[in-house]
Length: 166
Figure 1: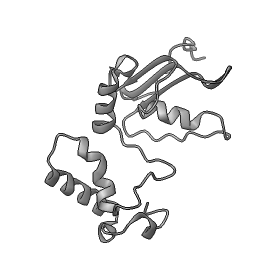
Figure 2: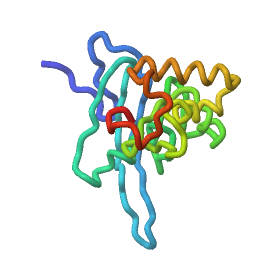
Figure 3: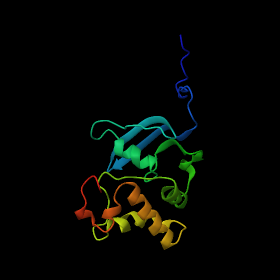
């Protein structure tokens, strides 16, 4: 019979790698007037490099809130969030902005594309905050679009792209 892991310690998986994302007892509470809405209640999670995970649940169960916390778009009310060995719960807003710019890729469910810009400029937009010059940004954006099969759609605006292309 296997020994049970302590309640606050995740079970080690055989051959597991070091976690890149580590959440411990993360909560997120929103205040709406006098009401308190508990979007996350004590989430504990570890994700390793090259690990694929699906987050599933009913509407209103906290999936988007969890993704916003993981993407450093929102902060947990309490708990601990470590990203690649760094404690994000103690980071300043500027440090979190750097993490979002350099470490996290985020695909919004509503695309969040700017309608007046073509696909190339939409992909290039977040790179404006990188330390590289405009030519490097343009080259990276073109490379990414080509890698995902959109090399021939770079000059198309969002309303000219299919849902999958967006």
